[in-house]
Length: 268
Image (cartoon, rainbow, N blue to C red; front, side, top):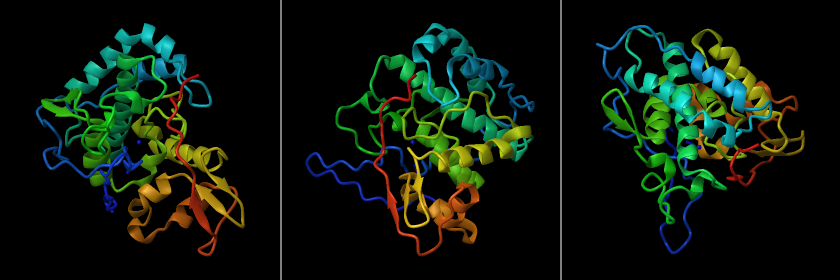
């Protein structure tokens, strides 16, 4: 799935050496970060239908039963129709808006996988030659929010990252890969959002498959490399965010490397 605002990324198009940052993009100037339609209902979306689906088809490890989800695809579509027709307005709180966009990203990612299922990886979707920000699954505008055609990249980079200045979204957005943070067995909601993001951070940093941390060395998720600008916002640092959640602490002198990203499907 990542993601300064956007770090400067050199896109190599020479031969087959495509950069492995397919979840990154720059904000799309065509996508407004303001409320999409202030005439829409001011009442925030009820995420309970999505919550029920997550409890039914996601396990405690964050792995998805896509076969089961496929059988309930119509129920997922009903929720996405609700999302599509009721974008956030200026009457919503910051947490209500953030919960909406995080749920939208994760739910539309599930829908994208289901449309092409069975697949071994989300990267199997679309063009065989995937140009970051252009022909990847995340760049595909396959849904509408209000009257605007949008992509997963638009939600992540042009709205969540650009508008909210909240690095912890990287612990919550799930791009259907094994190296992603776990998909929660519940929807994000405004009243629990901060606790949910903190829980995601703790789970992610203390999972040795995603971040292997010792006092002598930190082998971190590529997220901390891809989005290093985000982690440094507000005079913070990568080691600051690691130490917020990791049981094993590091310091400025701790050698940091980055783990290979496992793009295999996050399937049960």
